[in-house]
Image (cartoon, rainbow, N blue to C red; front, side, top):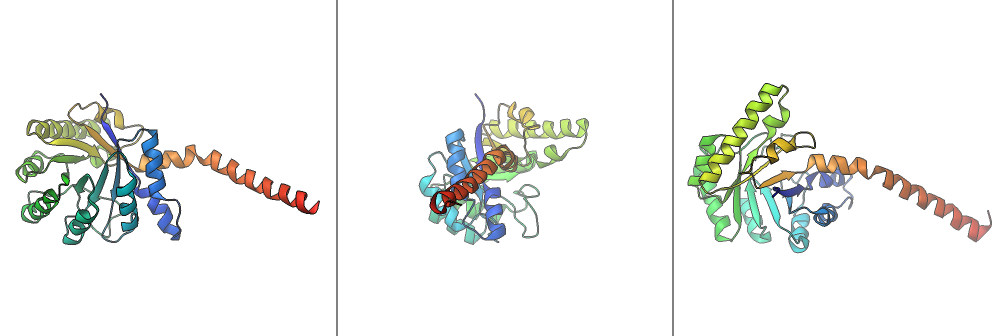
Length: 250
């Protein structure tokens, strides 16, 4: 059986926020993804609101028919928002305002106390908690000790590897972390930097039951749908002139 696919629609919101328009709507993209077979919708509500907005989370919670996974920092503000909107899963991630995208996994070992408080509050709110961590056995064990339900393995170093040797080593680390987590009874997801040319080796790790992928899917959708979008616009332009001829004879 294939891993579950969580489709991250953050980048749809990034395009929208570039012009502060109402479109493209990440909610609409999420519904299309579900119709195409996605098992989960993933969004990252950042503290600086650079892409996903609270409005998006609110509507997604009401319309998503699969599952909603909210990525967020383990801050008091974000925990309060998660309890307000009640996603199926919260994935706790590290967050720095100056980063372009999430650059690594949570240091669960060093941040045990603050993470424990966040996990307890979320679990009391009947929200499943996953920890976004590097493929490191100490981080896996620390996540288990905090009673997290699951981990999501950060696959960024694997995705960015430039040589076959480096890629193989990083894949081995992912495999070892997945096996260790599964033995401890943790659910295992993976994601970050996965695309159409590097996902298969990760998807073959049987302990990994879920992959969260966003940028690659949105990027392909932009190009795969470009022809249709251009043709639709040309059709409207033709129709406009046809209307003019019908009404004015010119």
